Amino acid sequence: MIDGSAGRRAGTPAWRGRGTGERGTLVVIPPCGAVRGYSDVRAHEVGTRQLHAERAREVFAWRGIPFAEPPVGPLRFRAPVPARRWSGVRDCAEFGPVCPQAEGMPIEAELVRDEDCLNLNVWAPRPERTLRPVLVWIHGGAYFLGAGSQGIYHGRRLVAEGDAVVVTFNYRLGVLGFVAMEAMSGGAGTFESNVGLRDQIAVLEWVRDNISAFGGDPDNVTLFGESSGGGAVTTLMTVPRAAGLFHRAIAQSSPATSVYGMQRAASVAGRLLRILDVPADRADALRTMPATALAAASGRLSAEVSGSDPGTLAMAPVVDGDLVPRYPVAAFQKGVAHRVPLIIGTNRDEASIFRLLRMQMMPVTPQSVYQMLAGVLAANPDVAPERVAAIMSGYRELPRTRGAVAVSQDAAFRMPAVWIAEAHSRHAPTWLYRFDHASPMLRAARVGAGHATEVPYVFGTFGAMRRDPTFALGGRRTAERVADRMRSRWLTFARTGRPDGEDGAEPWAGYDERGRRTLVIDRRDEVVVDVDRRARSLWGSRVLGFP
Image (cartoon, rainbow, N blue to C red; front, top):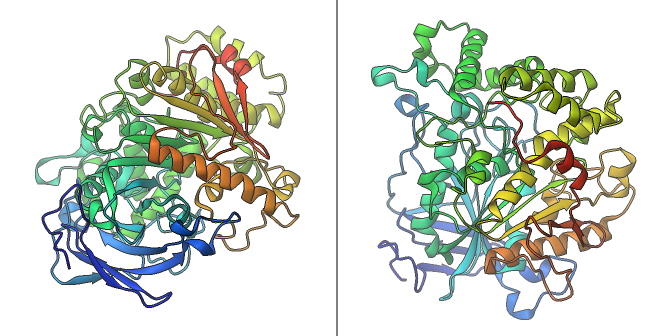
């Protein structure tokens, strides 16, 4: 056994273990304390393409490792406190609890919901002398739903194919993580801002200090996420405290403009208190309220804000002047984002799933879109109504639902991605993509390449969700080929900083304002010049959103 308690950043990782077939175990000894992982899958048993024999190595999973002290009692609504080192060997066979949350996203029944939810999961091959690239995933769910341990996010396929280390984690959601209550703080009952983001930074700090014991390279960390997880990625790229904690970034469907100022945050906090029937001068009552009540309030708050202020999220990061000093897209445009290589993109039909399921989080009816635009004008008195009218005139189908959907997804996802790609490409390597692939069933259901449909392509987890109808009309073989290429690009990016993929893949030139080359991911990949020309001509380069 090699003692790794000193926590070195390079050299031989600390590990010991024994192989016992599919139930093999492996103990590693990072500075946080010894942890026992379990064999999860063998690399040669996954994938539709033949893997090289030297990559047919066993993958181990360590589940439910605490990275912070339980955020309960006096630590509720406060920044995370690093977990104390434990003695003995912690068994990591089971996933840890996930954050209590409202109903709205299918969470596996075996995942326990509990406020003591600050835990992470590591997938890795057996450590070797050469350290491997690390990918850290931030799950989505509009900042109030989801968990890093959902089956769709399991990291074994990425590890097996990419000879990498994958980390997923849980963080505080909803009222517990993304409602700013600072204005109601006082004395020992201080509420801190952006505690969900602070949890994410704590994970990155844990990775920096511990991942080499698992064979991961703390100096080669790729931060990636989707939806609100992608929004967290683009926000963390502008957070000074996150500097140096990751070295590449991938933002999938980031709602990058859904970061608000303190005035709007205070208004949302006031709504929350009214929902909970708590006077503003007794806000400290939230400290002792059952977490289940706060989770239920998160759902009610989301529905109320989406209904009255279409186009905004109730719970999201806030520009607090402390952790988050400025609006993220503005930070990119000022050139003060962390200058790391970035892949950013969206799906062609982002809004379709919201329309199909009648989800209020995104305005998809003409009435709600017009209400959103009126809200933007009211919140931005320096924006000329003529500018908004000119933008809307470009959506010829707007009086109908199809036009409303197009406006909504451009406003929420596509244009923020383009604005960031434009700005970041002036300072660091940047790649822009659009995911267009959809199975025959998703096309028939008018979902197409809807929001989050690319996630199982990235993780290789088709069928992870129960009663998944994606391939009811066939198309799985084609989808697997698309997924192979997409994972290859993501993994090559994590390894080298360039998303070139394997031999024979379409070369993916970086994005800049001269060529505006965008990778369109479909049955075959194609690099298209200025695929967003029409939307860009309508919206321009000045960010239009809610402060």
